[in-house]
Picture 1 (cartoon, rainbow, N blue to C red):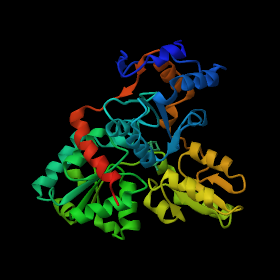
Picture 2: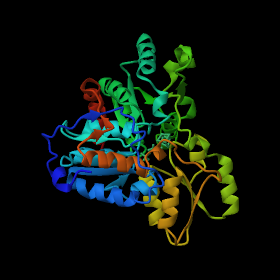
Picture 3: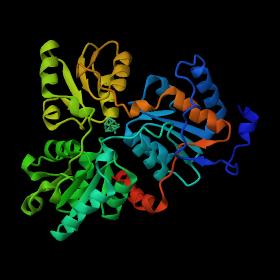
Picture 4: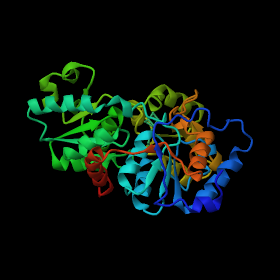
Length: 381
Ligand code: 13P
Ligand code: SF4
């Protein structure tokens, strides 16, 4: 391993080879290696202020302990945009978050995703070609100019780029209401991608639209599975995407927990299905869920409908309250969980040795318009 003095030679002029797509098989430390924590601590210290570690709230405990900043996807995007010092940003989260960080940082800064397999099944539900096909239908019907795309952060850089190019904005779970109101000031219709639940919950529960004002565009069906009249009549056209983790929570879960724990508060993420959100007491982003439960009175009870790593940490941090998982069965996000300590150690030690691995780099053509859409979001009132 390179010594600290060698590391200090690593600078902007150092010959770091980008190895995006490299397989780390065979180089990964064993998950059972008893020195993993010590190795991570040493590598992190060696990297010092050249590196910043961002950790999404769904990350494992073994990883989140190394995060300089933890947050929801909005807070982490902001942290990346605000930091111009760290040359290397280790993104402990999923691919679309690392892409956004790359777009929002300077060309000299490099974003690293410790495991390239950490994707998001919801983001994969909208491809650039499918969205372009839908837009062609909007053009044929004469509604493209009146429709403002609002793309959830959980989408590829290509979809964000489409959004920026067509006058729209990115949103996250913490600002979807503001983004949708902004879009309705600009146009007559909102084209919401790719999470139908966040789009529906925002349109109906925050903006007061009717369920019948929303139409669902199915990318696997001709004309999105809609008649021209249905498309023309809709105020919000929702892409047919969803999160398989949050889609598991049901109104039966809520009824069961309310019966079991009288007086319990139900707090859920807005990626949950509409009926689940409607029957909950509080809805919000991961950051908002943490803040709400942490600020709640001692002795209060909370059933939390979001990813399990977050809920377990929240319960441990609030021993004076009853904090339980809304579902009775396990519900981790398997792709968030791809980032484990062996991958983080591998990525950090590689850098200490002068090898940049798993860099996430969005090509400038895509990044240009995606940046416009992300900056519109960061500037939302
Ligand atoms: P937050 O923006 O609330 O952190 O949500 C991101 C996410 O992927 C939830 O599934
Ligand atoms: Fe994607 Fe759902 Fe995992 Fe969030 S919880 S990263 S939306 S699969």
